[in-house]
Image (cartoon, rainbow, N blue to C red):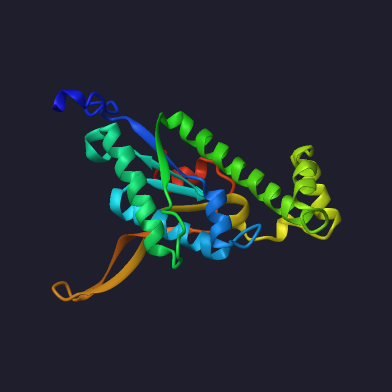
Length: 240
């Protein structure tokens, strides 16, 4: 019967870099069930950051990026020997489990995430993450826009109005009504990043009778991401 497992041997080519992207399934309904605060629920984002930290520690990607209910993990060393079925299934299930463990809530329905693998080369890493960060900004503007419109119009009318507006028009509407998106927290505009940083540790070397400096890496959750650029990815060791 093992022969019926037709996709079990499908693997990512060796020495490939890939991005694994995870998306929450039907999280609009989940947000309603949990009565999340609109446009941004602080508890939800704290949980998503903890989920990303769990993923980082478990699977050792070189970089993790999240906004809304989406998570992207960049790998240069693939887990499970590159087996696609294994990567997709375990990552999605681990993410859902971590979400439940970190969220103090009574779920009406078990949360789920889907997973996909995106092969990528060094030249496209910046392009990919800029694309997702641009989507984070779009999500930020739209979320604030619909939240504002729903204070002025019934839900259906508010939805109709925002569907006919360009992003710059929503931004201007908010600004004209006292909502300056430049003043909101950075992570709401640019997302959250998880990567390793080095910290200096000074200890005393008894054998040599002197202070000795070393550096140790730790997992850092960045709530103040810059606009992504080549220097950022070089500084965190993703690009050379």
